[in-house]
Image (cartoon, rainbow over all chains, first blue to last red; front, side):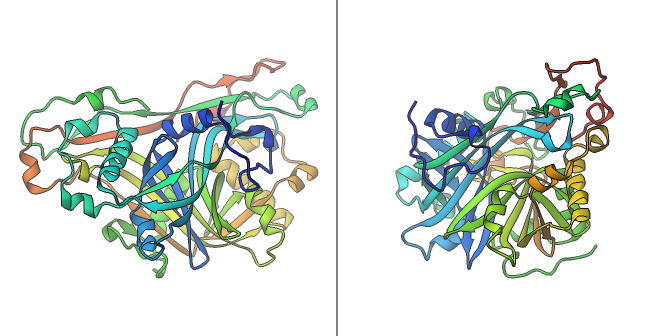
Length: 216
Length: 216
């Protein structure tokens, strides 16, 4: 497993046994999520904005509308933190103190840049689209030049990153195992409900493969 | 509806028609979510950390383990951004460009402080617990003094905040409505799966009310 270098910024201070720095773990979490939270700083104030994203190789691409307004003045790029969080279960212990969640999260630190080269921008948009709903790109009208110009895409290399993973049952204090309290996991799942056709559709069209085969 | 003052920092630059600044909308989103993303700055680098939270009145309380290490040196508090995002549906248009998500998000800006007063800290922990799984607090062992000391809780007043909401079907360019392409919504739902008892349980105990009645 390729390990990323652990820096003082990605070293876990609390509960370090939950930390992972290998690319396989980091990539698997990034590939399962589809909404990231992008953090950036403006006038000393942090901002955190949710947006769609996708990964290709060792880069994350994300829609940059919010951050790109700032980027125009930052030719060298924008320091960001991109965080992806998957919640798998509530961890219900015998004591409130040991309640937790089973989750998998990735934090990527670095400098994001606007994607300006046309071919890379096209590919980046496709990567984002495929990460949100695989195959949809091929079913619909592709972007035209004007739309491409109106879309801001940012790129962040995955070089300084860490994952944090909690799995398994609750861990209580030894004496609490004698308490007559139910403990365990409440798994959570995000699933699609039946698709809802646009009431403005002018013709019959079957629900397409991207929707029928959608999995989260 | 009580409206929060719109500041240059909470005024929406892009798609301003999706913006909301009334407390009812903001509170409803905060009360439906249970994981927030906290953004803060250290040495010019933004960090975004997921954590559990709860709202009471005009304050958000959240677990402050990550940020509290920094806070020890910041007696006046820590500039943060707390963001909560609920994804309701994928919005599948006839053109890639108009693909979107139906979502509800809240961004709260301000200065977070450590909750140090014992009674407020107790109440804050209860608020967070109740927001994650209502009623669980009353079923389990309460925190003891040592556990309270080991838990960092932060408070952020909801004074500078905005919500962003997208609902409804896709909106395509007029001429694209003639394309023979299925368009519509793919609603997403987070739901609990059957609870899994801790294999280390020493006695029979029924699945408790907090778990049986859990709703997201």
